Amino acid sequence: MDKGSTTSSKNSPIVVGLDIGTTKICVIVGRRNGHKKIEILGLGKAESAGVSRGVVANIQKTVHGILQAVEIAAAQSNVEIKIVNVGIAGQHIKSLQHRGIFTRKDLQNEIQRKDIDKLIEDMYKLVMPPGEEIIHVLPQEFTIDNEPGIKDPIGMAGVRLEANFHIISGHVSAVRNILKCVRNANLETQELILEPLASSDAVLSDEEKEAGVVLVDIGGGTTDIAIFHEGIIRHTAVIPFGGNSVTEDIREGCAVMRPQAELLKTKFGSALADENKDNEIISVPGLRDREPKEISVKNLAYVIQARMEEIIEHVYYEIKASGYEKRLIAGIVITGGGAQLKHLSQLVEYVTGLDCRVGYPNEHLAKNEILPKNIYDDLKSPLYATGIGLLIKGIQKAEEVEEMMKQPGVFVQSPQTTKVKKSIGLFDRLVQTGARFIRDDIKDEDYLK
Image (cartoon, rainbow, N blue to C red):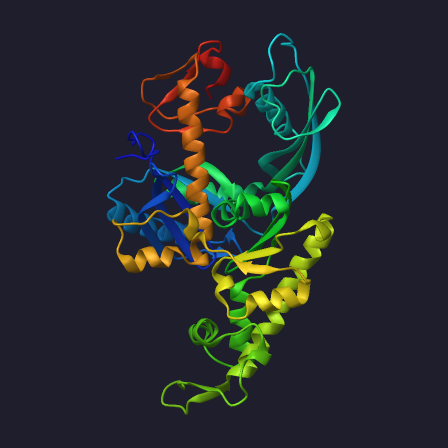
C-alpha cells in the first residue's frame, strides 16, 4: 500500500512525516479522517547519531537511523513507505523579506490561483548569495492596483498584482545532504519543510496566529523560532543551542557521564533553581565500584537555569529584531523535547515579560484504536510536535494535489515517477509517485526534466 495512491471516501491519502532531529529520527504515518482530525497509523523512532545541531554530519549513520525508524513505522502501520515529507533546520537557515510584482495580461478574468503561482515562481528565481538556495516562499499581504492589505486576492479584479514575501533559504550542501540521506534510505522526498513551520501547524491555533504569537521549538541541537501576526508568518530564526547544550553543561558541571547527565536533566531537572529545596540530594552511582556521587537538586537546577536563560535571551533578541515585540497578544508557545523541562514556562515569562504556555500536538489527533495506548499517549508529548506538523503539512499538500486533479484540463497519465519543474506554477515543486500530471495547454517538454 503506497501513500500516494491510498484514499477512501472519508479519509485523505496516507502520508508520512520524517523528522531528522539531533537526538532522534522519527517517522510518523497518518491521514486525515472524516472528522478532519489526524489519525496516526504508525510511529517509528530511532537514535540520531549522524546529526549535529540540526545538520547532517554523518550520512551513513543518519541513513541507518532513517531505515530503523521506517521499518518500525511500516510494520506498525502496515504501509509500504516510499514518499516522505522531510523537516529541515540548522543554524544555516536564513530568512528575508522581498516584494514581488506581476502585471496580468488576462484582463477579462478575475485573479486566479495561477497568477499567484506565477508571482511565487518569480521569487524562486531570486539571486541568492553563493552556496544558498531558497527552501520556502511564503506570501504575506497582497496589493492589487495599489490597494494594499489584501490577504486572499483570488476572485478579485485587477491588473497589477504585488505581494510581500517571507523567503526562507538554507545552505545548498545541508539541503543536499538531507535529500541524499533520504534517497540512500530508498525513499523519495515529497516536500522539504522548515521545522518551525511544521511545529506551528501542530501546536498553534488560528486565533493565536491572528493575535500574534511566537513559537519556540526547543530541540536537541537547535531552538527554532517562528513569529506570526494577523495569521501571517513574519519572522523565522534558528538558534544553535538546545537540550543537548544543557546536557553537556550538566556533564561538566556535575562531573558525570553523558547518559547520567541526560537522566538527571529529564528526571530531576528544573529551569528555576529557587523552586527546589536545599536539602534534596540525588545519589549517582560511581564508576567501577567507586563511591556514589551526591548532587544537590538545587545546584543541578542552577546549571540548567544558566543555559536556559541564555537560550531564552537569544529568543528574546529575535523577537525584538522582528519588530513585533509589542504586538504579540498570545505571547510565547514553547514546544519540542526541551519544553518538557519543569518550570520552563515561568522562566520564559520572567525573562521576556510575555505570557507563555507549553504547546502539545494532541488537539489535532483523533482518538486512536490502532496504536497501543502507551504509543498514542507518547504522541501527545511536545517531543513529537515537529513530526506531527510534517504529517499535517504533507496531508495539506496531498489534498491540494487531489483538488488539482479535479480541475478542468488536468488528467492523470500512466504511472511513473516525475519531478515537475517550478515553472509549471500550480504544480510548484511537487514530487509525485504513481501519477504524472498533464495540463492540456502545456506540452510535455515544457515541464518534464
